[in-house]
Image 1 (cartoon, rainbow, N blue to C red):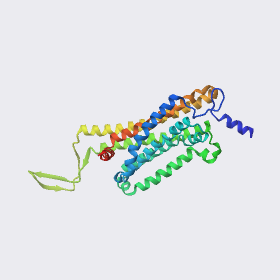
Image 2: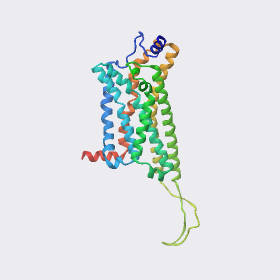
Image 3: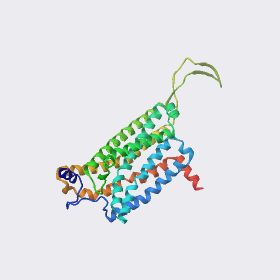
Length: 328
């Protein structure tokens, strides 16, 4: 029993003085940063979520259902900082336990929803007719709920299996397991992004040439003879400016999606990996400085949830028109 207790104590993050580190103790600067991020992020995401959930013609489209799931994941990412603000005003053990129960869950749900959206896009390009026939909004909602539930179970398995482990402290073994799950999801999301981008470019290249199934002979303004037995490729002139614009649009979409959803989580994963490496090499007492930087790293990971809705409103003309109609 004592050995087990000793192993548990070694697994808990501590300060330089040897005390158990409280993840909810924040500086005044960190509180102001979180207050600004929450005040901006929640309204921006609600601007996207409300029309997607309430307008019928938007809600019926499969891609908008996926976008709704991603936006809800973005919105849920503001729950942990909101709990931190509540703890700052009213320090309480139960508030801290709520934070430990929810932290990292929004990021995991965001990544799994992005992966599902990318899979849907790849299927739509590979099998357009079957996709239009079989893929419905109801099916998408069921799949998203099931996958999100599964990923929450994986990230918080230890707390679900033994609720007594849910304490106001950071256990490095649990953080390590959660980061491994997030890293796998991140790599999968990145690979799917690249695959979908390549398929999009392939379809753009194929659209440059159209194969006609018939050959016709013209005399003056009338068709004299049509030969259906001849099938030759015919080059159709498409504005070079238009093609470049379409390819730039695909490039921009890739940069935005990969940049916002992959680079910022990489910062958090890199930070945790650096802390775990420092702890294993130099010992926990020498790496206590990482715990002071942690709150700011969490704030950086919220940036996509703040500017993501703005980018969506700029690029989604249909959603923008709905919002403009509501203002009138």
